[in-house]
Every structure is written in C-alpha cells, then in structure tokens.
Length: 148
Image 1 (cartoon, rainbow, N blue to C red):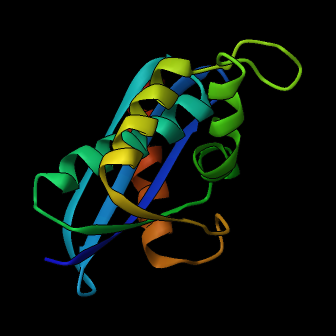
Image 2: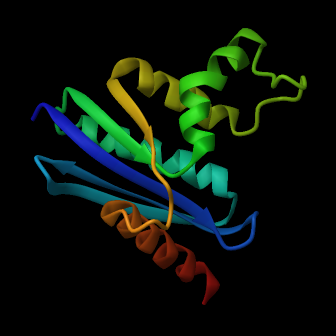
C-alpha cells in the first residue's frame, strides 16, 4: 500500500464539554480503517488533535508509505505546517508569549509528522465531502454517549 488518504474530525458539545474524535482511512478509494472515541470533558481542539494522532498511529501499522490527511480544522493544519516551528523556537510559547495550549498533543503530533511522509490538507467542514461528513457523524455519536 503506497498512499493512504485520511479524513479526520473532532468536536465538542460546549467547549469545554463532552467531545468526540474520528477518522476514516482509504486506500485506492476503498475504506480500510476507521475509528472514533471521546471524552466526557474536553475541548474541540483536543479532539481535533486526538483524531489525527490516532489516525497516523493506526494507519502506520498498515505499512503505508505516504499519508494524505484532510482536516476541517485550520488549527490542526496551520499548527502542524506553520505555527509549530515558531512555538518550538520560542520554547513552546505563542507569539503573545503565552504557553502553547495542548503542548503534549502537539509534541506527539510533531514526532509522528517527522516519522511519516504526510501531505496536510484543509477541507471545508459541513460541505458535503463524503468522508468528512462520515467523520462528523462518528464524532456526534461519540458526544451523544456522554450527553445521555
């Protein structure tokens, strides 16, 4: 398996609040893996990061050489492709000198990103993109587990 396309999503009911994450992985246009999970008390951004981390960890076990990750989170896409370089240079501080939120997740994602050949893509959420919508549905089911 040469390339795997991954769609991820995360969300919360309230922020913070009950949250969920999900990913769907495809090879040659066919779904090969998907997973989801959640937490009783979390944030949107933590769930977005958790989805991507789980996806990379799980799919790397399948032996894929290249990953294409599509996320509807500008926070994840811009964070891993641009902002993280400055954060590391500034001792994990933002441009306003505040500590980077979710640092432990960013450090984990940074390590995974360095170990894999990943293309990062942003997609518009709730725009009818099949696998992004599937992830959103899985996220809602995870949140519902904590809302009942």
